[in-house]
Image 1 (tube, rainbow over the protein chains, first blue to last red):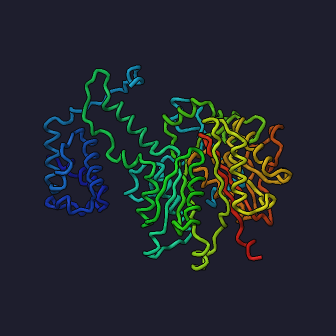
Image 2 (image 1 turned 120 degrees about the horizontal axis):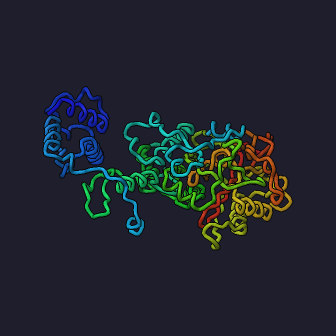
Image 3 (image 1 turned 45 degrees about the vertical axis):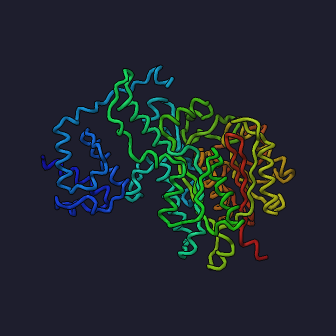
Length: 100
Length: 404
């Protein structure tokens, strides 16, 4: 796992939890100890998925993780090729679409 | 509100060339747009909300701060939030479908990760999102209502909040109108109706010219405006001085056409507001007209005003401030009623900016020559007439005139 992933993920956590990023240095800190409600958690997840082009299957599992485990999970998802799961396509606006 | 009112007095319009994301589809696009990014005025938790909700939160915050309204814990149950919005979640929906077609939709049937759309799309698209967040952030636990009545949305919200207060269902209310639909999809939808004015080749700010001989339609804007209502009894008890008394609300429906205005329906709303206020028509000194600068609309409103006010119509000062702030659809009711109240408070009425030559068929005083001082102005009216045929008229009176 690169430090870069950790830095970026911590910045996203800080944004959604509304805490300074320096308070997130302890990898043992559990995500559910932060003041994030369920909407905050899914927004965090969405931002991580966007950033790394990965898909986190179960959003609720995030609450049971600590920060270090979240870093590892994302690194594993990236390594397992999650990044190729979604490829941007040009908007396929055609007659088919218009008639949907 | 004060800044907006000052600009209305000076006739300094906000209409300008649209941002590039609209002009790439319609090169001549013009709008009355707020700065693209105003996130510095929001707390982090608000930054992923729909744009209309963000604008509503800022407006409500300003209105509440200005009013100094404070609630005891037990009063919160009687504190309502009334909101008007035309197209709820417009920019959120635009983002939803943009992501859907860019990231997920494929003609050959192959698709990708279905969670590529923003997880707050549902709560951001709800038309009641703005009212709900204002209620949540301020602990207002009375009725939380949202009215979507096209161009009359927040005028209806004002009127219904007023009725709720009069009938004892609330003691105070924050009323907000908001609209933010300057995304490509909604903009192009309006453009396709052919009701929007093209940019003026000499001065783009002068593109919307209500009551003018050469009027060409309205210009779509965005924004929010909020008012705080309180019972007279509570205000008195708290030693608070209101800007004005909301003294009349009229609402009618044309039941004729989905877009064409009907002066009969408009006249009924105006008459109902007057009747409720108990004022003689001669007491009204200024009307902030709906005045969208369409051919049919300005004529219809003029006919309605003449029908209700008779001889007094020619003495009325009438202006449409849409020339300055554009047509802000759901936000128009609170914005324009707020402007009328500022006129009452400051005893000066804003002009119809950019009106050089009135349409000969429109023969009332539309304040073509700039702001006019009106010492003694004691009652004002604001009209909002919606697609769908709903007509609303609101009246405010000056409190200083009541002691005599």
